[in-house]
Image (cartoon, rainbow over all chains, first blue to last red; front, side, top):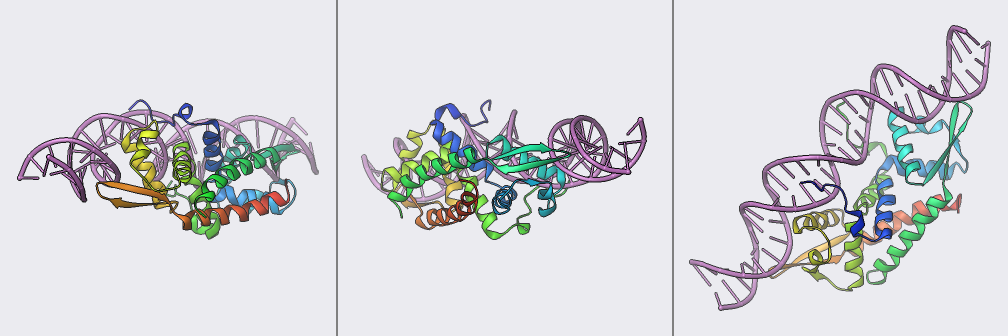
Length: 109
Length: 109
DNA sequence: TAGTTTAATCGTAAAGCTACGATAAACGAT
DNA sequence: ATCGTTTATCGTAGCTTTACGATTAAACTA
């Protein structure tokens, strides 16, 4: 087949965006990273790799995905890179999720 | 490399399960299906394919994924199959999400 | 300048995801 | 029994994801 990627134009922007954010959460390592950033209550410079059971290159890939989707930010601090939660992305996720939750829960739970 | 799949045993069960549920939401068609099931306020037999811009086989695959992860149920009703939201799965998702949200939001938003 | 540390990127292998047509299976109806 | 409807499954193409080692790039340090 020619078409093997998601036909994003055929769904609503909210559906597409929430799916994108959900995909970023669709790996335990990325959830663990978000939790680390949240519980340390500050930007983390370099300690992330040490706390995950994955190779440095793999962690870097996960960080890139979280950054690309807008859930975290990373800024250079000397030879290290400091990663923080990105409030805008987190808020967007919460809003989109809450909207879906409201729809789904209303008739379910 | 030999290991190319997620090392699930290296993360907490909650992280692994939430990632699994998030993956089920990581496609706009599956979000659209959940919304359809919620807003129609009843089980839907057969109308799902008609409302999505995807082939019948593709929709069936998406339904299977949602069923496997526990977010919907399907039961046979004559020649058709009726799909409903699965309250247990929805509740589980809400709980796991809420826990993450609480952690992440507390220090962020 | 040379060396060290830190993180990104490259290259690659294995597996997964998405899509569709074709086919099969299950059921009711004639 | 045969036909039509509905849905699942099979087979397959192509792209994506995950993982890692190796390398590169950037910045500080001596």
